[in-house]
Length: 125
Image 1: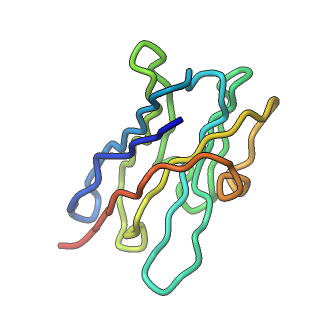
Image 2 (image 1 turned 180 degrees about the vertical axis):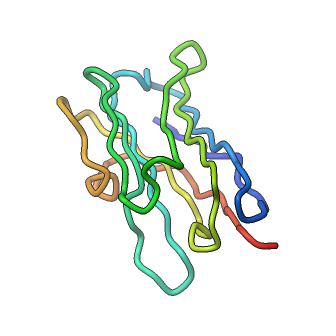
């Protein structure tokens, strides 16, 4: 069971990035998938999640309306589309997954069992 996160980089304020979380060794659409982030000197925090049952989503208030999480089952991948980036979005972003049925909550992302390595997102002019 492996998760591989990618897509981070440098973006200007107001810009966009799309993060990808690719799974190997298991079928990702059977898992709830979460995105978390950790800024320098801060604790890891949940950002978004997508459920395994009906692909319902949940977002941290500060990213709601700017970030969107979605699946591409053919590619065994979950994406985090990040628009309207702000300096405070700068962090290392992680994807995580677990076999938990039902709706997800973004805060639970930090407790999922399986984790990918992080990808750094820097928002700066």
